[in-house]
Length: 254
Image 1 (cartoon, rainbow, N blue to C red):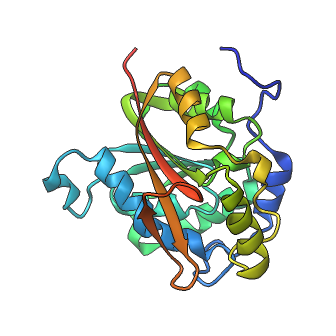
Image 2: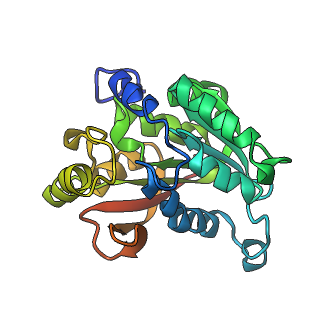
């Protein structure tokens, strides 16, 4: 398959190093605290799109028997939340430091005693070679703007999905407002995220992501805007997509 960029890896080494230095993934008052409150929105959203019956959705383990891949899993904030709901979770990340942190934290979590996520230090393109048409869902939350080659990244994610499987993406939009609020204000004034974590030139618009997914046989089902309240530190859905957005797409049968 031809790729639009000459970089045939998704791994951005500088980005991996920046993330690997963040030791407070599991501190709800730390520099990544916004990712914890984000689970209040993104986890139910994943459940509602993956689980088809209300009866199952309302059960204590709605994701039982669902195989889910968490790409760019970091310290495991999404992986653990999905595993608690019964999913068979695989978390992949190119940072060995973060994979070790995720393994350690999951092992010490009593709620996951009988259903640990599996963590692998690898790139998505390497993982996709072994796990073709394997997962019911792929979650790529807050990772699209951290990879070296978005085309290859999304292609690889889709390869791992079963036909009919869903891919979930949350990422900053590429707008001047996201540049100002998502980077300048968030990093320098509100100190909500560590400095230098986001690079505006790597942001992608919903249109760009949709076009790539269409190319790889996915139909985008919906795109929602996301907003973050820096005072309450909660997220909410919004009609406006100019800062952050969530996108869900289905892999079509070939």
